[in-house]
Length: 389
Image (tube, rainbow, N blue to C red; front, side, top):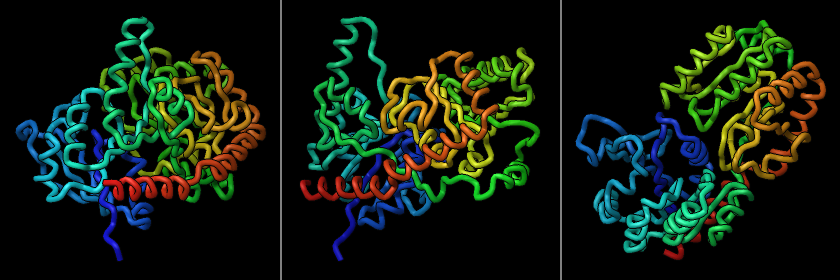
Protein backbone atom coordinates (compact mmCIF):
# COMPACT_ATOMS: atom_id res chain seq x y z
CA UNK A 1 0.00 0.00 0.00
CA UNK A 2 1.42 3.40 -0.94
CA UNK A 3 2.13 5.90 1.82
CA UNK A 4 -0.50 8.61 2.38
CA UNK A 5 -0.17 12.08 0.98
CA UNK A 6 1.00 14.29 3.84
CA UNK A 7 -0.90 17.58 4.02
CA UNK A 8 0.18 20.44 6.27
CA UNK A 9 -2.71 22.85 6.94
CA UNK A 10 -1.43 26.30 8.00
CA UNK A 11 -4.04 28.32 9.92
CA UNK A 12 -3.98 31.08 12.51
CA UNK A 13 -6.08 29.24 15.09
CA UNK A 14 -6.94 25.62 15.60
CA UNK A 15 -9.01 23.77 18.19
CA UNK A 16 -9.62 24.73 20.98
CA UNK A 17 -9.12 28.24 19.56
CA UNK A 18 -12.00 29.14 17.27
CA UNK A 19 -11.70 29.49 13.51
CA UNK A 20 -14.50 28.70 11.09
CA UNK A 21 -12.17 27.39 8.38
CA UNK A 22 -10.12 25.33 10.84
CA UNK A 23 -13.30 23.90 12.36
CA UNK A 24 -14.43 22.85 8.89
CA UNK A 25 -11.15 21.15 7.95
CA UNK A 26 -10.98 19.47 11.35
CA UNK A 27 -14.28 17.90 10.38
CA UNK A 28 -12.80 16.81 7.05
CA UNK A 29 -9.80 15.02 8.60
CA UNK A 30 -11.38 11.58 9.01
CA UNK A 31 -12.83 11.57 5.50
CA UNK A 32 -9.51 12.71 4.01
CA UNK A 33 -7.67 9.99 5.93
CA UNK A 34 -10.00 7.42 4.38
CA UNK A 35 -9.00 8.84 0.99
CA UNK A 36 -5.26 8.55 1.61
CA UNK A 37 -4.53 12.06 2.92
CA UNK A 38 -2.98 12.48 6.37
CA UNK A 39 -3.52 16.01 7.67
CA UNK A 40 -1.26 17.80 10.12
CA UNK A 41 -1.75 21.37 11.32
CA UNK A 42 0.55 24.34 11.85
CA UNK A 43 -1.09 27.09 13.93
CA UNK A 44 -0.20 29.92 16.27
CA UNK A 45 -0.54 29.98 20.02
CA UNK A 46 -0.08 32.72 22.60
CA UNK A 47 1.96 31.93 25.73
CA UNK A 48 4.66 33.52 27.87
CA UNK A 49 7.31 31.76 25.78
CA UNK A 50 9.67 33.66 23.49
CA UNK A 51 7.95 35.00 20.41
CA UNK A 52 8.53 32.57 17.56
CA UNK A 53 9.25 29.64 19.90
CA UNK A 54 7.82 26.24 19.03
CA UNK A 55 5.26 25.04 21.56
CA UNK A 56 4.77 21.36 22.44
CA UNK A 57 2.91 19.52 19.70
CA UNK A 58 -0.39 17.89 20.59
CA UNK A 59 -2.91 15.55 19.01
CA UNK A 60 -6.49 16.71 18.44
CA UNK A 61 -8.84 13.94 17.31
CA UNK A 62 -5.91 12.08 15.75
CA UNK A 63 -4.52 15.21 14.03
CA UNK A 64 -0.98 16.24 14.97
CA UNK A 65 -0.94 19.97 15.72
CA UNK A 66 2.25 22.06 15.79
CA UNK A 67 2.07 25.56 17.26
CA UNK A 68 4.32 28.58 17.12
CA UNK A 69 4.16 31.25 19.82
CA UNK A 70 2.97 34.43 18.13
CA UNK A 71 0.99 37.50 19.15
CA UNK A 72 -2.60 38.04 18.01
CA UNK A 73 -2.91 39.76 14.67
CA UNK A 74 0.09 38.14 12.99
CA UNK A 75 -0.78 36.96 9.48
CA UNK A 76 -0.13 33.35 10.38
CA UNK A 77 2.40 30.71 11.41
CA UNK A 78 4.19 30.61 8.05
CA UNK A 79 5.53 34.13 8.67
CA UNK A 80 6.99 33.14 12.02
CA UNK A 81 9.55 30.75 10.57
CA UNK A 82 11.11 30.80 7.13
CA UNK A 83 10.28 27.87 4.90
CA UNK A 84 13.60 26.15 5.63
CA UNK A 85 12.52 25.85 9.27
CA UNK A 86 9.64 23.66 8.17
CA UNK A 87 12.18 21.16 6.90
CA UNK A 88 14.08 21.24 10.19
CA UNK A 89 10.98 20.82 12.36
CA UNK A 90 9.04 18.34 10.25
CA UNK A 91 11.96 16.16 9.18
CA UNK A 92 11.05 16.12 5.50
CA UNK A 93 8.86 18.76 3.90
CA UNK A 94 5.18 17.78 3.70
CA UNK A 95 3.82 16.68 0.33
CA UNK A 96 1.45 19.65 0.17
CA UNK A 97 1.01 22.82 2.22
CA UNK A 98 -2.41 24.47 2.29
CA UNK A 99 -3.00 27.99 3.52
CA UNK A 100 -6.44 28.91 4.85
CA UNK A 101 -6.11 32.53 3.69
CA UNK A 102 -3.70 34.21 1.28
CA UNK A 103 -2.55 37.52 2.75
CA UNK A 104 -0.11 39.62 0.77
CA UNK A 105 2.31 39.88 3.73
CA UNK A 106 2.88 36.11 3.41
CA UNK A 107 4.25 36.34 -0.13
CA UNK A 108 8.02 36.05 0.64
CA UNK A 109 7.49 32.95 2.77
CA UNK A 110 5.24 31.37 0.18
CA UNK A 111 7.98 31.72 -2.42
CA UNK A 112 10.31 30.18 0.17
CA UNK A 113 8.08 27.12 0.14
CA UNK A 114 8.38 27.01 -3.62
CA UNK A 115 12.15 26.98 -3.14
CA UNK A 116 11.76 23.78 -1.13
CA UNK A 117 9.73 22.24 -3.92
CA UNK A 118 6.63 22.00 -1.71
CA UNK A 119 3.40 22.35 -3.70
CA UNK A 120 1.19 25.07 -2.26
CA UNK A 121 -2.61 25.26 -2.25
CA UNK A 122 -4.53 28.30 -1.06
CA UNK A 123 -8.12 27.78 0.12
CA UNK A 124 -9.39 31.36 0.23
CA UNK A 125 -12.23 31.44 2.71
CA UNK A 126 -13.25 35.09 3.00
CA UNK A 127 -14.12 37.96 0.68
CA UNK A 128 -12.08 41.15 0.94
CA UNK A 129 -13.70 44.57 0.89
CA UNK A 130 -12.32 46.83 -1.87
CA UNK A 131 -11.61 50.43 -0.95
CA UNK A 132 -14.08 53.02 -2.32
CA UNK A 133 -11.11 55.17 -3.37
CA UNK A 134 -9.80 54.51 -6.88
CA UNK A 135 -6.06 54.76 -6.12
CA UNK A 136 -6.29 52.67 -2.97
CA UNK A 137 -8.37 50.11 -4.83
CA UNK A 138 -5.71 49.86 -7.56
CA UNK A 139 -3.02 49.30 -4.91
CA UNK A 140 -5.17 46.63 -3.23
CA UNK A 141 -5.53 44.77 -6.51
CA UNK A 142 -1.75 44.66 -6.95
CA UNK A 143 -1.12 43.50 -3.40
CA UNK A 144 -3.95 40.96 -3.27
CA UNK A 145 -2.66 39.20 -6.40
CA UNK A 146 0.83 38.60 -5.00
CA UNK A 147 0.34 35.53 -2.77
CA UNK A 148 -1.81 33.75 -5.35
CA UNK A 149 1.04 33.88 -7.85
CA UNK A 150 3.08 31.68 -5.52
CA UNK A 151 0.34 29.05 -5.34
CA UNK A 152 0.05 25.89 -7.41
CA UNK A 153 -3.71 25.80 -6.84
CA UNK A 154 -6.32 28.22 -5.54
CA UNK A 155 -9.59 26.92 -4.12
CA UNK A 156 -12.69 28.91 -3.18
CA UNK A 157 -16.01 27.70 -1.85
CA UNK A 158 -18.42 29.83 -3.88
CA UNK A 159 -19.01 31.25 -7.33
CA UNK A 160 -19.05 34.76 -5.84
CA UNK A 161 -15.51 34.33 -4.52
CA UNK A 162 -14.35 32.80 -7.79
CA UNK A 163 -15.72 35.85 -9.60
CA UNK A 164 -13.96 38.24 -7.22
CA UNK A 165 -10.62 36.48 -7.80
CA UNK A 166 -11.24 36.37 -11.53
CA UNK A 167 -11.40 40.16 -11.35
CA UNK A 168 -7.83 40.06 -10.00
CA UNK A 169 -6.71 37.79 -12.79
CA UNK A 170 -6.62 34.71 -10.51
CA UNK A 171 -8.23 31.43 -11.61
CA UNK A 172 -9.76 29.35 -8.83
CA UNK A 173 -11.33 25.92 -8.46
CA UNK A 174 -14.73 25.94 -6.70
CA UNK A 175 -15.23 23.33 -3.98
CA UNK A 176 -18.34 24.18 -1.93
CA UNK A 177 -18.13 23.45 1.79
CA UNK A 178 -19.38 19.98 2.55
CA UNK A 179 -22.09 19.52 5.19
CA UNK A 180 -22.75 16.29 7.06
CA UNK A 181 -26.52 16.02 6.63
CA UNK A 182 -26.70 13.06 9.02
CA UNK A 183 -25.18 15.11 11.85
CA UNK A 184 -27.10 18.25 10.91
CA UNK A 185 -30.69 17.11 10.52
CA UNK A 186 -34.12 18.14 11.80
CA UNK A 187 -35.89 16.64 14.77
CA UNK A 188 -37.59 13.34 14.07
CA UNK A 189 -40.62 14.59 16.01
CA UNK A 190 -41.17 18.35 16.59
CA UNK A 191 -42.93 17.46 19.84
CA UNK A 192 -39.48 16.55 21.23
CA UNK A 193 -38.35 20.20 21.08
CA UNK A 194 -39.41 21.04 24.65
CA UNK A 195 -37.47 18.13 26.12
CA UNK A 196 -34.47 18.96 23.94
CA UNK A 197 -34.47 22.58 25.12
CA UNK A 198 -34.63 21.45 28.73
CA UNK A 199 -31.64 19.16 28.19
CA UNK A 200 -29.68 21.99 26.54
CA UNK A 201 -30.50 24.46 29.31
CA UNK A 202 -32.59 26.65 27.00
CA UNK A 203 -35.88 28.34 27.99
CA UNK A 204 -39.07 26.98 26.47
CA UNK A 205 -41.43 29.86 27.10
CA UNK A 206 -41.22 31.41 23.63
CA UNK A 207 -39.59 31.27 20.19
CA UNK A 208 -35.80 30.98 19.93
CA UNK A 209 -33.86 32.92 17.27
CA UNK A 210 -30.43 31.36 16.80
CA UNK A 211 -27.22 33.00 15.55
CA UNK A 212 -23.99 30.95 15.27
CA UNK A 213 -20.53 32.50 14.89
CA UNK A 214 -17.79 34.27 16.81
CA UNK A 215 -19.23 37.33 18.55
CA UNK A 216 -17.44 40.15 16.75
CA UNK A 217 -18.04 43.21 14.58
CA UNK A 218 -17.72 41.35 11.28
CA UNK A 219 -20.45 38.92 12.32
CA UNK A 220 -22.60 41.93 13.30
CA UNK A 221 -24.54 40.42 16.17
CA UNK A 222 -25.40 44.02 17.07
CA UNK A 223 -27.69 44.01 14.01
CA UNK A 224 -29.25 40.76 15.26
CA UNK A 225 -29.86 42.38 18.65
CA UNK A 226 -31.43 45.47 17.06
CA UNK A 227 -33.71 43.14 15.11
CA UNK A 228 -34.82 41.49 18.36
CA UNK A 229 -35.50 44.93 19.86
CA UNK A 230 -37.53 45.93 16.77
CA UNK A 231 -39.44 42.65 17.03
CA UNK A 232 -40.22 42.97 20.74
CA UNK A 233 -43.65 44.61 20.45
CA UNK A 234 -44.94 41.87 18.12
CA UNK A 235 -43.10 38.90 19.65
CA UNK A 236 -42.54 39.84 23.31
CA UNK A 237 -41.41 36.33 24.28
CA UNK A 238 -38.87 35.88 21.46
CA UNK A 239 -35.29 35.28 22.56
CA UNK A 240 -31.98 35.73 20.71
CA UNK A 241 -29.43 32.96 21.33
CA UNK A 242 -25.82 33.63 20.28
CA UNK A 243 -23.59 30.56 19.94
CA UNK A 244 -19.85 31.11 19.48
CA UNK A 245 -16.81 32.45 21.32
CA UNK A 246 -17.71 35.75 22.97
CA UNK A 247 -14.23 36.85 24.06
CA UNK A 248 -12.85 37.53 20.57
CA UNK A 249 -13.65 41.26 20.82
CA UNK A 250 -14.54 41.93 24.49
CA UNK A 251 -15.56 45.61 23.94
CA UNK A 252 -18.04 44.52 21.25
CA UNK A 253 -19.56 41.89 23.54
CA UNK A 254 -19.78 44.43 26.36
CA UNK A 255 -21.61 46.86 24.07
CA UNK A 256 -24.10 44.14 23.16
CA UNK A 257 -24.88 43.46 26.80
CA UNK A 258 -25.20 47.18 27.58
CA UNK A 259 -27.52 47.79 24.61
CA UNK A 260 -29.73 44.83 25.59
CA UNK A 261 -29.99 46.17 29.16
CA UNK A 262 -30.81 49.70 27.96
CA UNK A 263 -33.54 48.37 25.64
CA UNK A 264 -35.04 46.17 28.34
CA UNK A 265 -34.28 42.84 26.63
CA UNK A 266 -31.28 41.71 28.68
CA UNK A 267 -33.25 38.68 29.89
CA UNK A 268 -33.91 37.67 26.28
CA UNK A 269 -30.33 37.85 25.02
CA UNK A 270 -28.42 34.61 25.67
CA UNK A 271 -24.69 34.33 24.96
CA UNK A 272 -23.83 30.63 25.21
CA UNK A 273 -20.17 30.84 24.20
CA UNK A 274 -18.49 27.94 22.39
CA UNK A 275 -20.58 24.79 22.30
CA UNK A 276 -19.97 21.30 20.98
CA UNK A 277 -23.70 20.58 20.61
CA UNK A 278 -24.51 22.96 17.74
CA UNK A 279 -26.57 20.32 15.85
CA UNK A 280 -28.90 19.99 18.87
CA UNK A 281 -29.07 23.77 19.31
CA UNK A 282 -30.16 24.10 15.67
CA UNK A 283 -32.84 21.46 16.19
CA UNK A 284 -34.07 23.30 19.28
CA UNK A 285 -34.46 26.70 17.57
CA UNK A 286 -37.38 28.18 15.65
CA UNK A 287 -35.49 30.32 13.15
CA UNK A 288 -31.87 31.07 12.19
CA UNK A 289 -30.76 34.70 11.82
CA UNK A 290 -27.50 35.49 9.99
CA UNK A 291 -26.12 39.03 10.08
CA UNK A 292 -22.43 38.77 9.10
CA UNK A 293 -21.12 41.63 6.93
CA UNK A 294 -18.82 39.54 4.72
CA UNK A 295 -18.21 35.82 4.22
CA UNK A 296 -16.99 33.18 1.86
CA UNK A 297 -19.60 30.41 2.03
CA UNK A 298 -20.85 30.43 5.64
CA UNK A 299 -21.07 26.93 7.05
CA UNK A 300 -23.34 28.23 9.80
CA UNK A 301 -26.03 28.95 7.22
CA UNK A 302 -25.54 25.64 5.41
CA UNK A 303 -25.76 23.71 8.69
CA UNK A 304 -28.97 25.53 9.62
CA UNK A 305 -30.41 24.72 6.20
CA UNK A 306 -29.38 21.06 6.56
CA UNK A 307 -31.27 21.08 9.87
CA UNK A 308 -34.39 22.30 7.99
CA UNK A 309 -34.34 25.48 10.07
CA UNK A 310 -35.77 28.51 8.24
CA UNK A 311 -32.93 30.96 7.55
CA UNK A 312 -33.22 34.74 7.47
CA UNK A 313 -30.07 36.54 6.38
CA UNK A 314 -29.09 40.14 5.89
CA UNK A 315 -27.33 40.77 2.59
CA UNK A 316 -23.55 40.40 2.89
CA UNK A 317 -20.42 40.65 0.79
CA UNK A 318 -20.01 37.15 -0.67
CA UNK A 319 -23.68 36.12 -0.79
CA UNK A 320 -23.64 33.42 -3.46
CA UNK A 321 -25.79 30.99 -5.39
CA UNK A 322 -24.48 28.02 -3.40
CA UNK A 323 -26.83 29.01 -0.54
CA UNK A 324 -29.84 28.51 -2.79
CA UNK A 325 -32.47 30.76 -4.28
CA UNK A 326 -33.58 33.76 -2.21
CA UNK A 327 -37.10 33.41 -0.81
CA UNK A 328 -37.18 29.72 -1.82
CA UNK A 329 -34.30 28.30 0.27
CA UNK A 330 -33.59 31.30 2.52
CA UNK A 331 -35.05 34.73 3.17
CA UNK A 332 -32.68 37.57 2.17
CA UNK A 333 -33.32 41.06 3.56
CA UNK A 334 -31.51 44.43 3.57
CA UNK A 335 -29.12 45.17 6.43
CA UNK A 336 -31.81 46.97 8.42
CA UNK A 337 -33.19 45.90 11.78
CA UNK A 338 -36.80 46.69 10.82
CA UNK A 339 -36.60 44.60 7.65
CA UNK A 340 -35.10 41.65 9.53
CA UNK A 341 -37.69 42.01 12.31
CA UNK A 342 -40.50 41.89 9.74
CA UNK A 343 -39.04 38.68 8.30
CA UNK A 344 -38.63 37.15 11.76
CA UNK A 345 -42.22 37.99 12.64
CA UNK A 346 -43.39 36.44 9.38
CA UNK A 347 -41.49 33.21 10.06
CA UNK A 348 -42.68 32.97 13.67
CA UNK A 349 -46.31 33.81 12.92
CA UNK A 350 -46.51 31.48 9.89
CA UNK A 351 -44.65 28.38 11.08
CA UNK A 352 -46.04 26.13 8.36
CA UNK A 353 -44.65 28.31 5.56
CA UNK A 354 -41.36 28.69 7.44
CA UNK A 355 -41.09 24.93 7.86
CA UNK A 356 -41.71 24.42 4.14
CA UNK A 357 -38.79 26.76 3.34
CA UNK A 358 -36.65 24.83 5.81
CA UNK A 359 -37.48 21.53 4.13
CA UNK A 360 -36.70 22.96 0.67
CA UNK A 361 -33.38 24.23 2.01
CA UNK A 362 -32.46 20.82 3.43
CA UNK A 363 -33.23 19.17 0.10
CA UNK A 364 -31.04 21.78 -1.62
CA UNK A 365 -28.09 21.07 0.67
CA UNK A 366 -28.48 17.32 0.30
CA UNK A 367 -28.44 17.64 -3.48
CA UNK A 368 -25.84 20.37 -4.00
CA UNK A 369 -23.58 20.66 -0.93
CA UNK A 370 -22.35 17.11 -0.49
CA UNK A 371 -19.76 16.31 2.18
CA UNK A 372 -18.58 13.32 0.16
CA UNK A 373 -18.20 15.50 -2.92
CA UNK A 374 -16.08 18.03 -1.03
CA UNK A 375 -13.86 15.30 0.41
CA UNK A 376 -13.38 13.68 -3.01
CA UNK A 377 -12.49 17.03 -4.59
CA UNK A 378 -9.98 18.02 -1.90
CA UNK A 379 -8.35 14.59 -1.76
CA UNK A 380 -8.03 14.56 -5.55
CA UNK A 381 -6.42 18.02 -5.45
CA UNK A 382 -3.88 17.01 -2.80
CA UNK A 383 -2.90 13.80 -4.58
CA UNK A 384 -2.51 15.67 -7.86
CA UNK A 385 -0.32 18.35 -6.28
CA UNK A 386 1.79 15.77 -4.48
CA UNK A 387 2.37 13.97 -7.76
CA UNK A 388 3.50 17.20 -9.36
CA UNK A 389 5.78 17.92 -6.43
